[in-house]
Image (cartoon, rainbow, N blue to C red; front, side, top):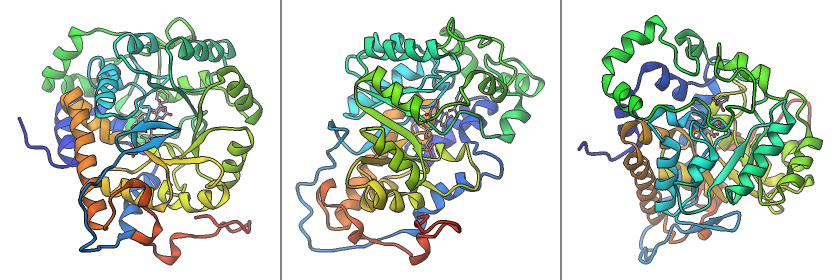
Length: 394
Ligand SMILES: Cc1cc2nc3c(=O)[nH]c(=O)nc-3n(C[C@H](O)[C@H](O)[C@H](O)COP(=O)(O)O)c2cc1C
Ligand SMILES: O=C(O)C(=O)c1ccccc1
């Protein structure tokens, strides 16, 4: 059993274990990957304030996200095709999150269907919805989320069209996996993965089969997304979805103060400041840089969460200190899952928890609720300004 002390360890094992095209699919940002890189490197521009002799005994990372208790303010972000990285990946990741005392978000684009996951876990999870052209599918999916007793709906707004990821196109990523020349070779070198996957043959997208056309014959993810996702999504539809759902609603993919105000107007319970892990608009601000202006606009009226770029407990600490109520991890959990299944997701959460706890202590804080901007040095130019408006960009 390898010694795992940081998320990077899980990433290395994951990379060696899965076919290249699946690693690339997870790791890629769009186009030049500027936003993908800055999601992480912008965290490094924030400095933490070391304090001493502040009595660090009796610490807790417990918090709440949308009023639900969490053992630390880190939930699992929705990740499409998770079950492609490890058989039953969605079920295992959900179990790991629940056992750790935090939340799991099931993607619309998951391999295991919502019913599958619900019947294999014993606590409610969150469901992430994509808005398809087929409105009947959307309505039915919301009903299924209710039937599965999901405790929040996470509506993703930043992917009605796919940001281009060069590697996926070059690797010929198609779902279900078709043996292109490059991955025949790769698969043969990763026989362990192939064997594991064969033990649990599953359909590609468990939620969608039978509800959308063409899903079993994808030429490419982007072509299929363009065909199936609704480009006419607007705030009226968001309102309709809120009404149909009737439960806690989280709007994901907000990166601008104006959109945050719209989210507030439609009555969402929370927003996730996110650029989809740098997979959509390349050249967009990193999430951590976009966060301050969004907090200024709506921070006292709606719960604000953040994802994109979190690879450590220090990153979580900085996001919370900046003012986010909670965070989500996407890739960090998938590295763990792809490396070691459920155990790997648990390990990812443990690593981040320990980093968060120790760093909090070294900042002289004992509770999540005590964290604020006073523990950080924020460079003056961290907050920029959009050229054509008076509102701050960050
Ligand atoms: C492989 C992969 C698939 C994703 N699929 C979805 C998805 O189906 N739905 C969604 O709302 N977000 C999806 N996301 C975005 C994540 O929910 C999250 O916003 C992002 O991963 C956060 O960045 P991080 O990976 O740096 O933590 C996906 C991200 C990755 C890496
Ligand atoms: O890859 C993604 O980021 C994503 O959200 C997605 C979109 C369409 C199908 C599967 C996943």
